[in-house]
Image (cartoon, rainbow, N blue to C red; front, side, top):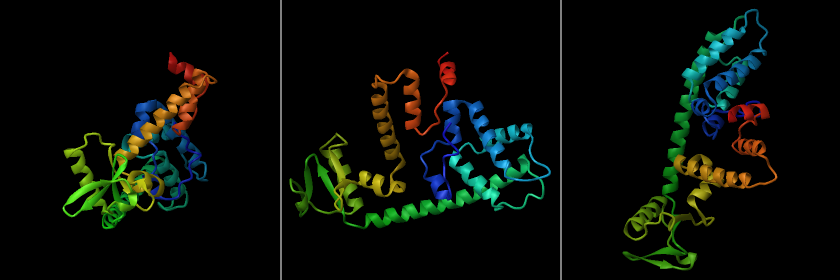
Length: 267
């Protein structure tokens, strides 16, 4: 599973904007047993912080991990890092010399409500920023190697970017959709650029405002980057099959596996 200890999480924004996989995806990739075992380790390490008369035994830890995997399948590892930080600070009430699965589940429910409220706030802010961006005329439409220029009620292609017309974001994307429908079937032939830095809008968002990058575009870019890296790693003759497996896992921000685990998976 992904590295838990290496994560430094202080805000809900970090968890919500993280590209890490939720528990549901980790279950598919590694199996429910490994995910539950990972959560058991996280719980066991964090409860050591508390000096209590009544703490959790191994069976309670196992049962709590199972409940969490079943109910909070959409949480990421960052969520548990942030939750236990807040839990240790006493943000979910006093423990009164008692810590068990029920106490953790009640606190997790409070965390979930806070997380939901923050997600709604961030979505509102994202929508507000997009609306503001749509009002600014900073966007150019590029057709192949040429740029689009408005000429009265008509349009023309020009070679010089400086002669192109600046549109609002909404106008630029409407023109792109119209051009693709009427003239160009190749989706990569017509692109929208930000005139302030001459990058495509998606390139600009990825670099400057990744939280505004549409999920579909983010997934497409991550997939492309992964397969390009995979092709390079698999072609590296200096690495054996086991080393290639771990190189791919490191690139995907997953914990390396031992050689014994690798051999077991091959059987």
